[in-house]
Image (cartoon, rainbow over all chains, first blue to last red; front, side, top):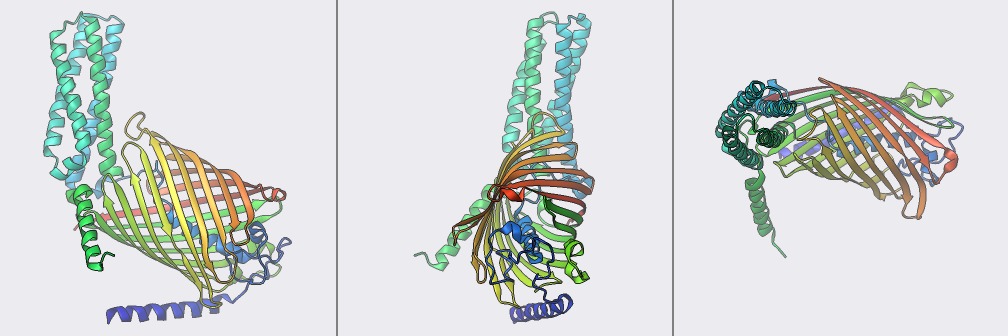
Length: 231
Length: 309
């Protein structure tokens, strides 16, 4: 019964619409397209001048009705285009997120920034070693790097532990990669503890390894951010 | 043959499998209402060596109410485009205001199935009421389906099919088309490299085939675009190389074969987007027509709000 009423309503609405729109618009068939190039051709899709077959759709642009068709076609075509282009990501707003999601996003931001900071620490340490600065300077940079790494490991562990099971499932690949890098970093931390500040070769190698793994972690955090908030 | 009952059971099992395999169950996406609205004003100017071909002002209003539930969402889209066409004012000897006006109202129902990290599927039912004030109105029914994939490592693709059924009750003109779209691309620096700079390679193909037209000859129109895009701090630049042809497959006649370029620049700041688009086309089939140029400029103001249950 409801379906029947809806159907009747649509038919009435459409009948009213067509009746009144005709009254307002008249029924010009495009014959008054008074441009010099209007040779009476019609666009193949317009269906208003039956007798004239098209010879060239370009010329048909000169008919007003063909322009109507062009607009209509382009509007329909817009419907199948992607809602966004590839590099126009949706700008998520923090106000639109629940408290839970906002905390999640802040933790992702924090993890990303920490991994960038570790890479910067590594660059600085490498520069200090290469320019043969004093041992105290090298020790200072090593201590800063170790502190940042330990802080990151603790925060990352909390972040992954607090994640709900569905998020863990969605982000499985990223979490596995982060854990793998953290294992490697832990091994390098042991190596760093064993090495002396004047063993430059070893320090250079360890710093480069830290930098590589921090870069891998940064990629994983960026992937998490994209999957959860931008896709 | 499989009976309807068996087919239903198979479909249900298939969707349960997809749901278990891919569904996104993040806690805050279980329900809610999202509302988005935009107003877009665009100006189009097309001309060739001889004269102005088109000069439009389009005002577009669009509202979208979406109800997401787990991996499924249903949306109602309302859209209205009011077009002022300045062509008659320039070229008609006695132009009337009604010669310049056209309105297109659309109502769309969209179902979206979102299988996280895998694919999105859209089912659309659209109804357009097209009213040129100087011609017969028409009603267009647009059923469509679209598949999309977009991945964190940069690859994205989409496939779409719309079958517009365009009917003019006044002169019984029925036109049925098949509109297909394929888009493939790769975005560099999505999860590595610079943070505020992105570079994309894109290829797009649109095919529009007249399946049925009770008045006019049937035509295939194909457009292929290959190019790249750059995004830097909200500024997006796209450059495409284009080929468009119109082929009458009943008469076996090639009407036009265009080659050209398309350049588009977008800039977004908060809820406002500015865009300028240029397309230059040269018809290899009709070289006397020389270059055909199209300019479009638009400003879009968008609003988005999500209300949770």
